[in-house]
Image (tube, rainbow, N blue to C red; front, side, top):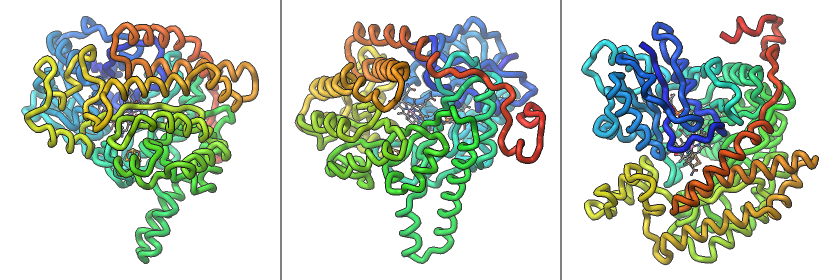
Length: 515
Ligand code: B12
Ligand code: SF4
């Protein structure tokens, strides 16, 4: 019997941008008695169910966007006689769906680091238990990923997580509800060991797959001080100190390493933090800007963000301190008007951000927005192929509406076209070339151009366009661009690289320490 872990995707590009971390964490969570699992990422190649034999186990990890494909894999696997177990955020929120549509034998809710082994044991022993709740485990229990199972030449970036959870409460985001509002931070040591392992394999670009790399703000600490809550002050200071310790240790890794993370804009008020990030080679961060007006920010419960000119200044602060920003903007908020699109495009240009994504308002399950929307539509939700739009992920992509929440003044098509227009403007060749001045050599500028175009093709066209011809062209382009672009990210492996802390204490065989 073999254990397979499958990451579902409708499109395979041959090359992946970022390693789907869950595959390698679940591989680490698979007890040795079952042998090494086979990890299969469908963003590289479509899964072939004929490899399965009766009695094998297939673990399928789903988020809302790939749930439908995930259910198809589960059904095919069960037909071949395999045991099928689901996990991931979507299975956590809708476990019953995996049984009804995905032929599940069992579902793991929440963190799989510990619950996966239990589910495997129980399912294989014929237990009646069908749902296993992994809950939210503390940071010190997060498992180190099995990077020895990584097909090393297939991804541009590897991903390492340093914390889960976020103290904010944005209305369009499920993280604070599913992963908790208390940051669950890992100690620096296991994080560094994973990164060293990846650098040995030739990965120098690492995405820190965190919800919010800056979970404790200076304002949080000041507030606790004002409330004279000494215990809370000490707790927050300790979390902050751990962040600095992690960044100190990151700065001791090879100088060619590039880290990228997700962070709230508040980090720009904390120049000591930004400087530590720069030293740690955290060269870029996705910053959720969402809206450029105060009304828009209020609508998404994100009034800790700034609007207008102050926003541009704050975003520029990142760049001035050596951190490139990928600004993330949402269109389709009830407060948006026709001129919001141009205003956003102008602000993105003025803010000196390096990359941007313009996503259309989507009510993701588990969010406040989703709950409100589902409640509002009740039994009157419009249906496509007999499926209510409140279960839009079950509607085949070719006929799935692109927008779900009707806008008070604009049609969905208008929002879609205007959003597309902003992508076109931000990623026009002259605009990219202008931005590419942030790197020094001609070669680096050309690489910047390549990466910008690939990013646009992978994320913009596939997400927004309604007609399949445009989607197919975008996918073809992405496939074509992916191979040469990966070369830009790969580095010469450093098989002898040591963990700095081990060098300090004189450990001389890296491979004994890594296992
Ligand atoms: C890093 C990240 C990204 C990265 C990298 C993605 C990648 N290739 O790995 C980037 C930036 C590319 C990205 C893009 C997007 N992301 Co994202 N991303 C994340 C983030 C912050 C961390 C994911 C991660 O690697 N975690 C580390 C692993 C170890 O944890 P995990 O995946 O949760 O897995 C654990 C459990 O879920 C469980 N588990 C998972 N699978 C399985 C399977 C089995 C069998 C079992 C037993 C258990 C199990 O066990 C694991 C270990 O404990 C999450 C936030 C979050 N808290 O999940 C959002 C998140 C997953 N992303 C989200 C979204 C919406 C997106 C985008 C659609 C955003 C956009 N508008 O473009 C795109 C979609 C891209 C795509 N097509 O997949 C949402 C998904 C919501 C939903 N209901 O589906 C999340 C939850 C964030 C949010 N704001 O709500 N993302
Ligand atoms: S959008 Fe970002 S800041 Fe808001 S709750 Fe989610 S992870 Fe936190």
